Image (cartoon, rainbow, N blue to C red; front, side, top):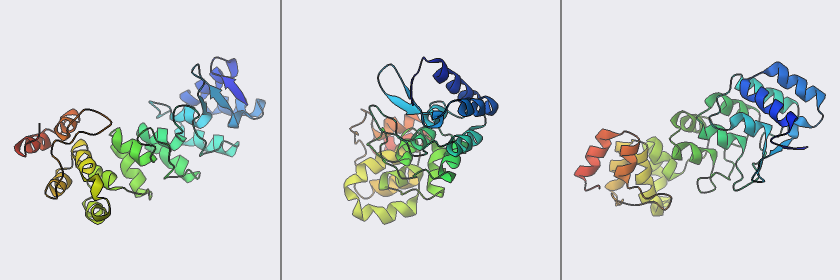
Length: 232
């Protein structure tokens, strides 16, 4: 089933999900065969599932975990992809919105914790969470067993991971250093700088130095240290 986003059924099911109205959602699912697996088409031609409706920014809907359970029980595909300029799963969107409650519910329902397709380099939900500074979601994903890259580890201050991963990922040292500053992780930043990271490296995704990343996220003490190291 494909619905335009302005159709009455699409509007009704979206409203029920966003409001956490489980009774209304149950009724709509019971009265409309195939609704649990429906895709809602927007004006640009992209389409999303009902689980994407739940996890769409700012997410954190009332009764989020129960809504996941209800939709999956009715047949919703927990790993379904957004169809448009990227291919993110509902877990990517929950991670991007720091919605830990729904993130846990999706994982409990079988979501692929390391699914690719993120808007951040086509990566995993963890890549989205740490890039968008959604720290609760990022740490929960690590707790739940997500694969951790050098950049992930540096951004989250996982020093033991950084030490273990750096030898095989030396080409990512500058990005990892930038991530440590973005995440406010001075210990990891010091470790990487001492091993050759560029204190003023500019990432390809935005014109912002490590100092700028630290300042943007209000890590003022780290910013002061970066200035002492020649950061600008």
